[in-house]
Image 1 (cartoon, rainbow, N blue to C red):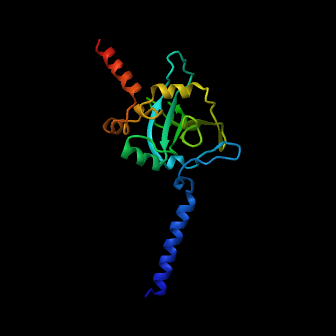
Image 2: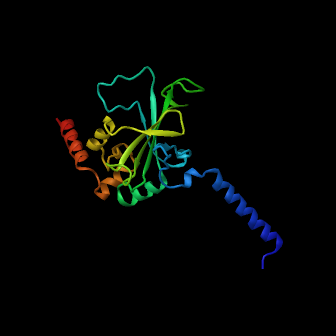
Length: 206
């Protein structure tokens, strides 16, 4: 039989757990949420998701000229999708990958060399797998300082680039150091990526 003290203690624990759940609602929900006009709602707590990688001044176009500043990009994925990838080597439906671009700082505090990430977010993009919603299963959404993002048109170069060069299921797993070995072991690397890798290795040996 519960004493009044134990009953009060259990109630207090329940309230603490409820408060923690209410504080981070978006991090516990699964899958994308859309507005009535087909925009994507930004997953507010995406930084609570699984961190995959960071890039520095990356560009897929050799002719592209870098601006007079440096940039970091960070990639996060919803936990459910990450767990599925670890088990299968590929992405399940409702996968959400968030690309966060931040400015790079070189001078500040005690830093003397190299760069660190600044507080300014210069861009946000979400790559979503929603098989029932998009003809090609995947879609990109860009955010312009708002809580909702517009879908990038299917004619954009990013779709053909990802389809042609992605290591796994139109995603650049080749740049995710903890997931690439999993994809290799599961045999889920795309034929196009494997061909590119073989060609690159041959060129290096020449």
